[in-house]
Amino acid sequence: MIYDTFSRGGGRVPRHRFHGRERSLRDLPRLNPAIKYTASYYDASMHEPERLALDVLYDGITAGAASDDGGTSTARAANYVSVIGLAENSQSEGPVSKEKSSVLLRDEVSGEEFSLSARLIINTSGPWTDLTNAALGRATNYMGGTKGSHIVLDNPELLAATAEREIFFEHSDGRVVLIYPLKGRVLVGTTDINADPSEQPVCTDDEVDYFFDLIGHVFPSISVDRSQIVYTFSGIRPLPRHDDTVPGFVSRDYRIEHGDVGGIPLLSLVGGKWTTFRALAEHLGDTALQIIRVQRISHTRNTAIGGGAGFPKEKSARKIWISRNANGHSRELVELMLKRYGTRASELLAQLPSTPQELSGAPGHFREELEHVARNEDVVHLDDMILRRTSLAFTGGLTHEALSEIAAAIAPAFGWSAAAQKREVHRTAQILREVHRVELNVPGIAPTQTTDGAHHVNA
Ligand SMILES: Cc1cc2nc3c(=O)[nH]c(=O)nc-3n(C[C@H](O)[C@H](O)[C@H](O)COP(=O)(O)OP(=O)(O)OC[C@H]3O[C@@H](n4cnc5c(N)ncnc54)[C@H](O)[C@@H]3O)c2cc1C
Image (cartoon, rainbow, N blue to C red):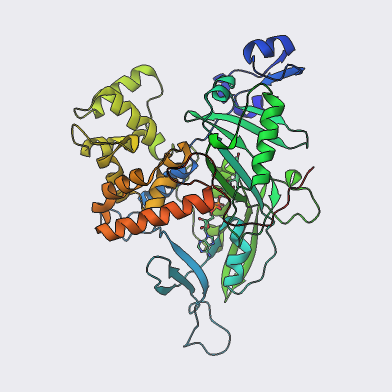
């Protein structure tokens, strides 16, 4: 009922429905025959949060770009740059004054350190918020992040069993978990385990067992094994400190904490979700504007983000968009680019040669496409491309040869020599193995390289 209230989009989305055992098994015949009933409801799904984050970022930069009449640009973003402290103030006498304090930053690529002065610092470093505050010299104890892992299975039988629906259910330990068909694979998740944000989270063997157990609970006649795992990923939720509360029951709401460092006001964001990010950003923006005494001059409440702006929703509008932006390309290619980049694909299509070179190690991806992404989407390393700009790692099957081919495709954007390409391939292979348990050219899950010491918390 609550989902109906919030997600029906003014009636464009159907209402929820409950079905008894017979109808449930007719719709999903591989479900556990002991099922009593199912409920179907409709909700939005976000398939590429990394790409949405980029689109939001580029909209912000565009909004803050220098005006045509020669004003200065007011928005900038810097990738691979960390806050490492508060800059020493050599000129100050006594307490550090407002004007003279600045934040010390490190370019993680070149190692260069530099300082930046600010009227306000907003710490939105997610589960690392306390660590960033500590680096700034302010001890806080706001966060209590929990680790959540997922596995991605290449199992056509399980994929078919989901009938293109997310299967969302309570497992025997009381946690709500999911089996979700996505990009021709099946995503299974997730766990909720107290975690230390200073350690790299990795999906453990215990978590894999937990996932296999829950699949067996819902689809008992479908066998799954580790050789079908093509990818794993883990993240730490930016939850508030929750002491004795069981992770699954910690509020997913957010709050904004006020403080200061070296005389500069400091806002720390605690919590938050993708679901609420627009409201949260507006709230944080308003709070920041109040502190720096600046009037809001525009809002984005009804703004379509990035490639969603002017997106052709209806069939006829789609047809028009495709013919206007085809630039001599096949309908299939234009459709694929529109699906992947939204209306931002028009820029790419204008630049792609008439017969772009499809990469043999990354079917459906083109040499010139990835080079365009490398030049325009703040890519620094090959792993940015594999993990955060495309779904190439997620869908699995990457090989050393494919990584070398992709590195060669994007090398012109960075002037990478053959040796630099080799280093990038090596770095990416290592991240895939150690963080995502993917061993190139070998099917199935790689052995764990690190132990995070986490224990499963059962409700
Ligand atoms: C397993 C899991 C499942 C989830 N499921 C959902 C879901 O179904 N629906 C939903 O809405 N949300 C979900 N979330 C939550 C959602 O992903 C997060 O709320 C969201 O990503 C938080 O965004 P953020 O920008 O605040 O923080 P993050 O995305 O964590 O970004 C913080 C950034 O700060 C950077 N950083 C850290 N330290 C420093 C420093 N010293 N200097 C500079 N930068 C620094 C980090 O590198 C990082 O890029 C899930 C999260 C997890 C982990």
